[in-house]
Length: 312
Length: 270
Image 1: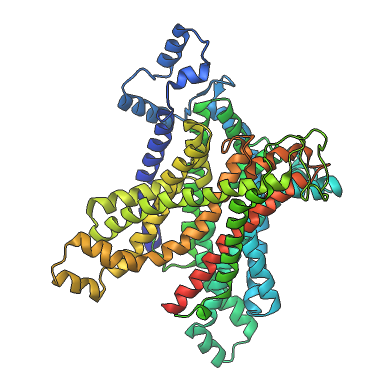
Image 2 (image 1 turned 90 degrees about the vertical axis):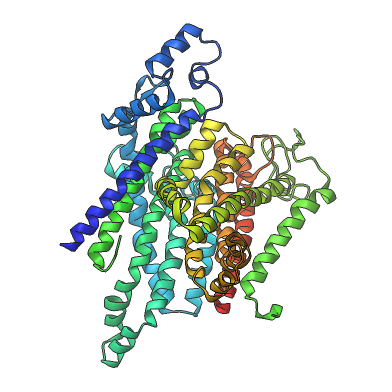
């Protein structure tokens, strides 16, 4: 019963955050130096057209009124209009979303098993050669620019060996898997080191815990002790970090999509920035934030299920 | 305290960093070549004795450009981190020590800022302000200070109940004096460690923006920009991309190792 209460509280806590997100994304367009409509339509657009567009988007209203209209539109699922594509932004996002989502899930599927495997290997061989190799590579992994890694891997595995396509998205499920392998791998290589370091030190910390000594003195087999007790208790901090890393992951996909020409959300965001399609940039930023808090929420709920002691 | 007690990683990291500093700031004096000098007789040359790192599609020497770009990228690490660190520390100190409205506002702002993927928010701010290094610094400071503030606040909450703070209160010192003179020096350690990790991230983001064409503008040499320049030629001329990337990795490694070393050292001390 208490678990539901905790989750409900967590949900209520989301309301001000959602409001804040809407304010930030609203302010983004207000921050544009100069007249956004003028910038979007170009210097040669006649004044009447500029005025008409401004009126159509409500940009001639007082700022508070504008925000309320923006909020009202959001509640109705209207994210605004793209000036370049002449389409509702929501439609554009829905077109691109599956590709980015596929990529993100792909990255997670690569990240989780490799993190757990590497961290366990390192922790069980603490201080030995294999541990040094893993922890040293982890330091390197964090400093590698993901776009550079992407280009170099495309050069090596795509061009040199011809194993993987170097751009695009593919036509069916297996095509997606094949096309997105390198993009997913380069993003994962960026995420895994942080998580491995975290999980490894959590495991090492738990290995020293009293309950481990108690278990050992009771004669529990080491394997059982490790996988059933130590690992279970070590996973929580890493799970929370994983929630944070998902936000990083979405940041990473933006740039990776650009490198591998995956026509996803990030790619749309970049091209909209260059096309001065501000409403699209605004909507995508908002959308990424909503996705991120949804994931964090999911991670928090999973945490309470794994460990009922967790207070959100 | 003797130098021998410091962890090896700290020395290696500091060594790498100093090496980069010297190379980037003194190297150009020795080489003396212009990073943007075009040479149409040496287009896309493989690394050779005249051009140790090869040349790009305009015949520019990659080594010279990598070294010159080092100035900008090292500068990015500092100018990207310091404003966020200062603003965040002040805000976090006030929030943690005095609580009240400042704390309530900080917590709400933190929640909201952290809901956005960091890179996406920075990208969006740069998108509206316009491309360029200055706007990148503004965006990084605007988003980045929050993490520092949160960290400092958490530390302050622990320290502010310490006996020496109580003693200072009993002695009748001004609350601001206590906050800055007694609390602040005792909460700075984790911030400095975090700043090293942050510097790596900032450099990666800066190079990332440069790569996307939203950071440092070409033809100025910057590692991200150079990688973007080399991308169309990567099939034949891998060296254009390879070296600026390695430069980014090594500089980042320097900062990371300093951070790791400091963390190790401070934990032992505690």
